Length: 363
Ligand code: 5MM
Image (cartoon, rainbow, N blue to C red):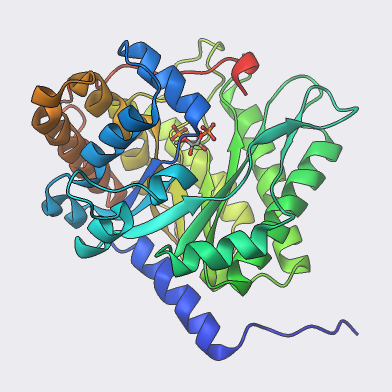
């Protein structure tokens, strides 16, 4: 016999309410939790210095966008520094979000580190003091957290070693978050790097997700109180295969149906280097696959949410409202895609086709 206990009823109720609100129909999440190093790379694109004040100004732009954005946005993921920053008027960012009905979230992993003796693979660290950090973040206004693991497709990867380690670290993270009343967003990114085809990405995604849900079960994680943030199933970025959005949608749904229990309330895709328009179109196609899909299928995009806003801001005060208009348009497009009603090309963004792909040295 295995002895264990479920979280008490109040905690179950609290977690599942938060999770449901984050995937309410037509809503998704803005991921703006770039670490300072990643923000530096983004600012380089617009020739801006990577200072704490410039990071505050940029996040202020995103966070103070017109409240109507909350028709399409349920949550906003921040980096530690951002959670403790304030607007020019001295209002904490978390409070501004709450007032608009947007739930503040926080990145809690402490980045990817090499997995010793693996084929150049990674795990993510940050478990040691996680319960203390989660308790503090909850007090400071957050209701959910995110932790990312990355795996890459190569001839011999992801290895059994990397799959098992990453599944386990996600399960341990999820259990700790739930104990501190935060909904864990389980982020599993099978990278687009490589020349593999769609089928290979589908099979790897299935294998990784199956391992994750086995680990979550082993760790007694309450599935109604988690959200999954996976990659869409796509061909490798250097494969030169031209799969249609319908192909991508079908492979994505097949992989998810085979591995994600219906108890999970929602799946929020990461964009993984897709351009803004491409991500909207693929999310829309995924929602239109004519098979039973028992979860909400929406977005928690980082790059595919922010490229046009960042570029049209360019670090200049005068451009703030144009940049906010870009953010609103993209949120609207992704929102329509999350209910399968986005007409490709119907909402144009200034930099809608620009991709921010990464290479393996950037992990
Ligand atoms: C927004 O970026 C997140 C934080 O990244 P770093 O810790 O590397 O600075 C990142 O985890 C992001 O959430 C994922 O890369 C997925 O976002 P995309 O841009 O693929 O939607």
